[in-house]
Image (cartoon, rainbow, N blue to C red):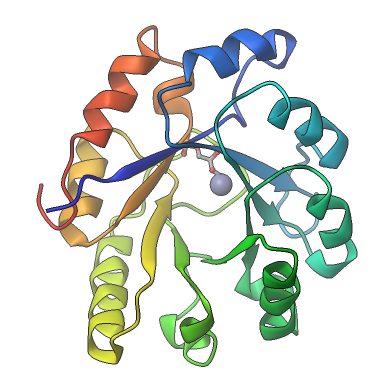
Length: 220
Ligand code: DX5
Ligand code: ZN
């Protein structure tokens, strides 16, 4: 049985101390960078120049989670930031298939995120092109929210679809992940977890990361 992977969101890091903040999460599997435009979500975060500064100061791989309308406007700038994965929201573009191909053409791994209310069948025709799907377990926009319990069934349903179709694609979850909810989502079938405040606001971040990483996919 596989251990889960853990990406840490720095959305709620102390931005005045970024070198220290990156150091304290160095045992994570990757850095998760939440990009918000004030339109797709009601919050603003940071953009490509800031990301480039951070990717240059960590040995961890990085992924950009784009919570922006019309992400095609920004993709070329993100291609220059050093991220190894770009996740776009299915709801944010009329041309999901094309954007996935654009990201792949740069040698960057594409991922697609779904808001809590978006049905899984939205992805039917693009799933074979993906190696990961990120299911939002909160309404995107802010860290520190509680996981929406109904999302557990969505994880299980996606796992079933992937198995039935014989598609190799990892399921990630983002939002409200702590030790308790991590057990629930991994039992439901999540392969990787994105966690923010649970780790960043902890006095013992390395211990929190380790305890999440010990969980096994498909078992509490
Ligand atoms: C929510 C972001 C998440 C968030 C996670 O819009 O996509 O990555 O920062 O933070 P927690 O783990 O605190 O919910
Ligand atoms: Zn995120």
